[in-house]
Length: 69
Image (cartoon, rainbow, N blue to C red; front, side, top):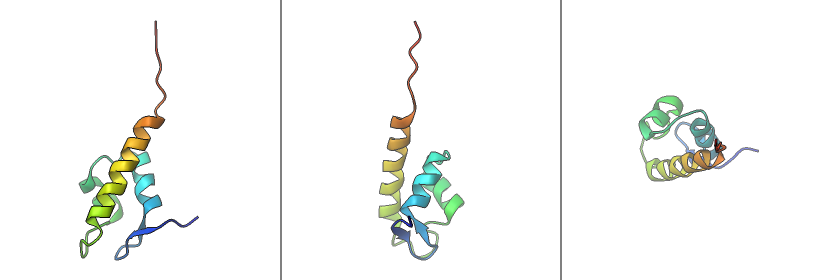
């Protein structure tokens, strides 16, 4: 499965952004450093930020909660 390209200049897909979030990326600056997303023309920044924010929220929801008595 390929995914949708978010950053055409650096061939970064939504899957790449979600994977980065799953690997611990928590800021747009970290995403840029890791993937190069939005480092060229910047046209993808809005979509990349939205995808990262959504992915971070999903990662937070996937963390199991342990309740101790």
